[in-house]
Figure 1 (cartoon, helix red, strand yellow):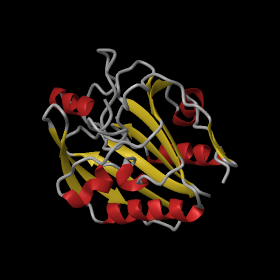
Figure 2 (cartoon, rainbow, N blue to C red):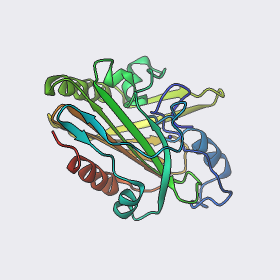
Figure 3 (tube, rainbow, N blue to C red):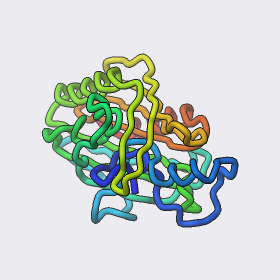
Figure 4 (cartoon, rainbow, N blue to C red):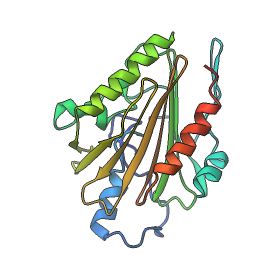
Length: 242
């Protein structure tokens, strides 16, 4: 979720454990250790924004507010607490092969570039702080609909080029991931990133266009979070005027 690598709001890492009690007791100790470090390529802690509540995003006539931890908890059926926030997409994350830079960092500048007008992201984790369940949201607002659509195309095309990848975090630990992309549309794409040897740990992701905004959500858990990811994406998109 630290999030994704030392450079991005975007790694698939779990947040700090905060508690010795881990909900998914069936995970092996080795897999749990790796997952606590790397959770699902895409949501890293940006310096100076830890623990802050998401703020209202206002750009011209575009206003968007992320779902609160309470609202996300209702949709997920899990008690969630606030985590890290960021007001700009992090730099690109190195991936092997290099063609997987988008899959490894879907919320980085690899996708959002430098032409956005405003950006906001937040990650929530299980209330116990174990990092066994996380919900992330990100929105980038562009000067016009076409530029937002261009960012979605970069994301969709990049996912199509990457069935699997590996990445190494700042501590030198390497993890491998497999990606499954579902049939995209001109306004949305959904995909799953599953960690190899992670005891079922996966991130269920969706990206959607809403006017000049590109929204993304991720639900990461050692279970099937696809339905919850859809609910979160619906709720998030419903709060964005576009």
